[in-house]
Image 1 (cartoon, rainbow, N blue to C red):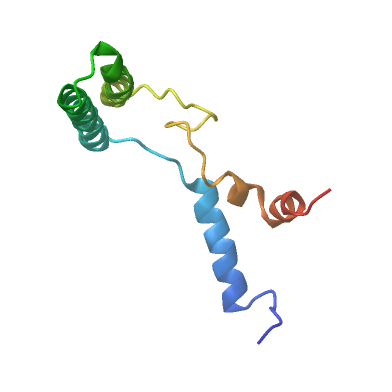
Image 2 (tube, one colour; image 1 turned 90 degrees about the vertical axis):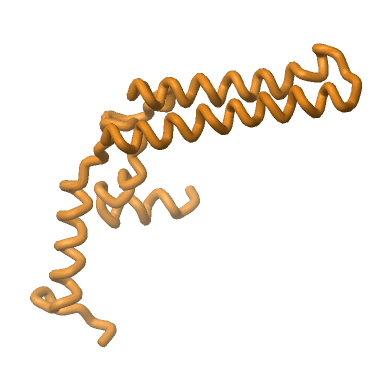
Length: 118
C-alpha cells in the first residue's frame, strides 16, 4: 500500500492534479467584482456611520471621528477599485495578482526545499 508503482491509480491522480494546477488560471468575472465591490463599499459606509455616531455619543469632537473616517475611506476606495477591476495588491503576473498556487506549480522539489530551514 505504501509503495507507488509508476502506472498505479494514485500516481496517475497525482499527475492529473499537477496538470490541472498548472493549467489553472485565476479569472475575475464581472459578477464577482460587483458583489465584492458593493460589499466593501457598504462595509466602509457602515464603519464610517458607526464611528461618527459613537464619537458624537461620547461627546468627542472631530478628532475622535478621524480613525473611523480613515478606515471608512480606505474601505470605500478599495470597493471602488474592486468595481473598476484595479488590483492594488498585484504581486505576480496572474490576472488578479494573487498566485496562491505558485508553490504547487513549481513541483514538490521546490516546495520541500523551501520548507526546510537553512
